[in-house]
Amino acid sequence: MATSLGANTYNRQNWEDADFPILCQTCLGENPYIRMTKEKYGKECKICARPFTVFRWCPGVRMRFKKTEVCQTCSKMKNVCQTCLLDLEYGLPIQVRDTGLSIRDDMPKSDVNKEYYTQNMEREIQNSDGTRPIGQLGKSPSPSDMLLKLARTTPYYKRNRPHICSFWVKGECKRGEECPYRHEKPTDPDDPLADQNIKDRFYGINDPVADKLLKRASTMPRLDPPEDKTITTLYIGGLGESITDLELRNHFYQFGEIRSITIVQRQQCAFIQFATRQAAELAAEKSFNKLIINGRRLTMKWGRSQAARGKDKDKEGVSEMGTRLEPVPGLPGALPPPPALEEEASTNYFNLDPSAPSAVINLSLPPPPGLGNPPPPVFGSPMFHPMGPPPPPPPPPMGFRPPGHIHYPSQDPQRMGAHAAKRHGD
Image 1 (cartoon, rainbow, N blue to C red):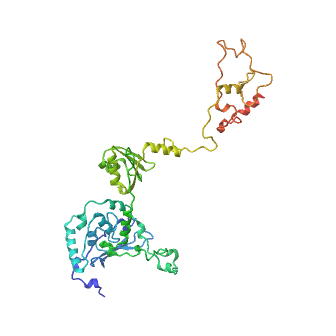
Image 2: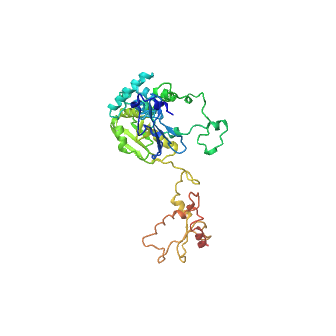
Image 3: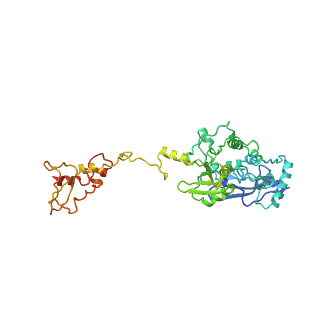
């Protein structure tokens, strides 16, 4: 049985025969080894209604099968993906991109005018080098700040999930975990995002996704400069491990002279200090919420003054090295001053018995009754010194200090030889 596509062969030379589709990274999937089925002239384009080669593939595990929806000519005219119809450079709907670039591409919608317009676009595509967009998009100026702020820099694979199981919604699905569809509650039918049309998305009109993004762009935060005019430092966060000092310098040198760039690898951030306040304000205005280096979107804030950082450290108990000092449990906040030497001399008792093997410091027993201060040494005794009285003995080590307020367990007089001193005194 002949199909309508096979019978309509009067303009067959304009049918598309491609070897590979034009896809974005999200629709292609994260698996580099992918299997596709190719069907030549398998379907009509949903925009120009001309037969084209249809590709079908699965972008990943537990994902739904996807296929191309428009021909490559319509894809190149708008610089969009053949499946999701999002811009290949920014990952945004066509309506948002055209609004940001301030262009208006009025494509004809009637059959005859649409065919004539498509043929002219094909001729322009053949004459171009294929490295830049064509039509009104190719004549557009540099990208706007709004597009750089809203641009998606990483793939969004959640968009490839399966559809919601209608049997599960009715409570009749018996597959359980083997069901290839999602068992989730569907969105509210009154939600504008539930009503999307592929033609409206291509022509850039009445697109609910684009309206949501444009509202988000109007409420985006701004980075206001601080009142302290001495602050010329910008904080850059989210560097990762691949961004280097040279890459930061190559981006920020266009705004003014850079005094220093400090990268804190542990925190994955950097501090960029400009020579003038005017250069720092220009860099913050041109780079806030749209700074992308090596495919990573970086955050930006203003640095703080030295006085503000010092007050915060005092409040939070932060040391000069930037680490927080936690109190040790069981210890006082501050150690008292050491006792005077006179007090140590009055509390220490030295055993001067010559028969003892060594002089032992007695810290716990008082002097024996009847024995006051030791007698002065006589000539010929071991304690006699011809040059005068011997110098006072050095203060005992920390472990033999007299009992008192204990600061550390090692200063406890009941440990570290105190028992031996008692036994020797006895």
